[in-house]
Amino acid sequence: MVVYAIAFIAFSIDLARRSAAATAAADAAARVEVKETVAVGAPSSPRSAGAAKPAASVAYGRSPSLRVGVAMTVLAWILHLSADVLRGLAAGRVPWANMYEFALTGTLIITTVFLVVLVVVKQDLRFLGTFITGLVLVLLGIAALNFYVSPIPLPPALQSVWLVIHVFVASASVGLFALGFALSVVQLMQARRESIAATAKAVKLTFLATLPDSVTLENLAYRINIIGFIMWTFTLMAGSIWAEKAWGRYWGWDTKEVWTFIIWVVYAGYIHARATRGWRGSRSAWLAIIGFSTVLFNFTVVNLFFKGLHAYSGL
Image 1 (cartoon, rainbow, N blue to C red):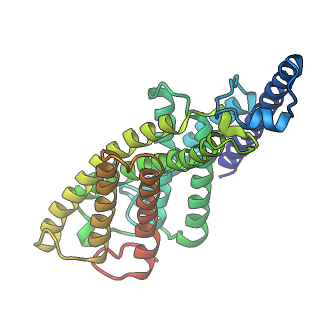
Image 2: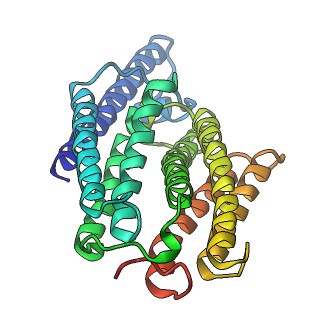
Image 3: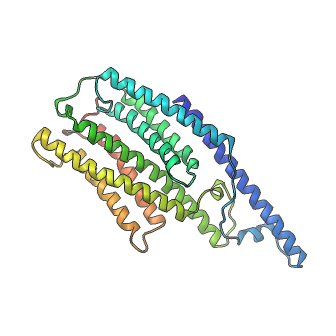
C-alpha cells in the first residue's frame, strides 16, 4: 500500500504539471492573439480573446513524475502479486474464497489490467494512474481494516474447479469495468470542458487540455467495457453451471445471483445505448458509471448485509 501511495502521489504531481502546462499554453495563446488584434487596431482583452476559442488539446511531453508513477505501480504490482500468492499458499487453495481475499485478488487484477492496457493500447492512458492507484488504495485499505480474516478451509459448495474459473473471470471483468469507469469519469469532465468552450464562455484550462478529446475517451471506454461485458456474461453462465452442480439448480433468485444479473442488464443497456442515436456521449458515460456502481454495491453491501447461499464474506 505504501508503494501504491507513492505511485498515486507521482501520478497526482503529473496531473498538476499537466494543469500548469495547459494554463501556460492558454496564457501564451491569449497574449499572441491580443498582440495580433492590437496590430490591426481592434480593441480586445485576453479574456474575450481566449474565451471564444474551441477547446483544443495541448502538447504535453514526457514527465519524470509520470515515469516514476508507472515504475512504482509496477513495483507495487510485484509486491501485490507476492502477497496474493503467499495468501494462497497459506490457505492451501486459490486466494479468493472470502471478501478479504477477493479484494486482494480483485485489486491485483485491476492493476494488472491497467498495466496491460498501457502496453497494448496505442493511446497513452498513463493519465489514468491517479484514478486506478487511488481506487486500489481505497479498496485495499478497506479490506485490510474491515475484511481481514485468517485463512480458513473452504465450505463444501466452494470445493470445486468452478471456484477458479468463475471467480477469476469475474475478477478480470471487474478490472476491465474499473478501467472503463475511470475513462467515463474523465470523458464527462472533458465533455464539460468542451461544452463550456463551445458556448464561448470563459473557462480555465486544466490538465484536461493535455488529454484526448471526449469522443476518443468514449470509444476507449466502450471497447474496454464490451470486453468486460463478454467476460461478465461468461461469469453469469459459469455461475449457473456451478450452482447446478452444488445445489441442483441453475438459478434460484439468490441475492448474489440477482445482483450479478442486474450488473449484466445495466452493461447490456450501456452497450445497446452506445449503438443508439442520441445516447452517445455523456448519457452512455453515465450508464457506464452506474454499471460500475452496481459492481461495487454487489461486492460491499450485498456481501455484508444480505444473507443467502452466497454468503462467503468470511466475516
